[in-house]
Image (cartoon, rainbow, N blue to C red; front, side, top):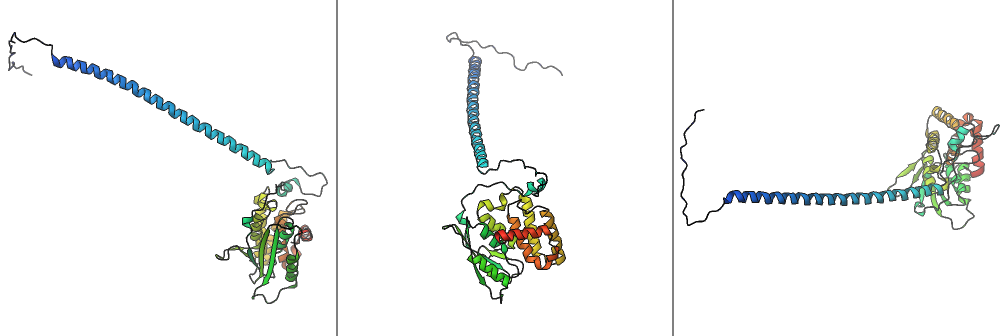
Length: 329
């Protein structure tokens, strides 16, 4: 690039001698302002750091207090669970092997069916509403009679019987069942009462319970009715409290199929499955203990006895005889 000569030459101004001289204002003011700004920013930074540090400490203290509170609540909850476990006697105990030559269940079977003792609890009276059961005279719900005898000292299962117009005449077996279940009364007074109205009606194998007359929502199948009543009744007889609930539900489902399968060949196959589940033990509830599975199985076999009499093996026949003799299922 080429150079240019200055357009304006420096102008020298003669200042009058009557005025006093001063230092440049702009330069000193800017320096002073910069100095003040620097001090202000340093102070502001220190204050912000102190404020943030204070807030962090307060936040940490709040978090620590919340954590201590949560840990304390967890410790209290754990103590409550341990206490409940102890009260309900749910602490696991190893199964004792059967003695040599014993006629009781094998260790494998015993582990499935033997239930631990349950703490007796008061019956929830809100569950004890009136129910209606529709049953066909050819499929007598023996499970109701079994529950009535089983609960005789804990709950008064009061049953009233009526006959629907679809049933012209009751069989001798149905009349005997009706007589026994209506005449049996508990000897203990002031027991909680569960009223069931049994109506002989032509509903086939699908015995039904009406829990809500207005909505008419039936529970179909005697096995499912027994499940429902088991939850309403005394807790020590509730099948859901036993160890192997999955196995118990499988047995109850098999009993349901045994009653409701229409084909005789299918009924035989279901009976074979039920017999294999029983095995060589005396009952599904273990040696000396009758469970809801035994009640359901006995009632189911009685209802199909006329068709499958030749297919019932001796051990299953013994179960039916025992349960019938003890609780009338």
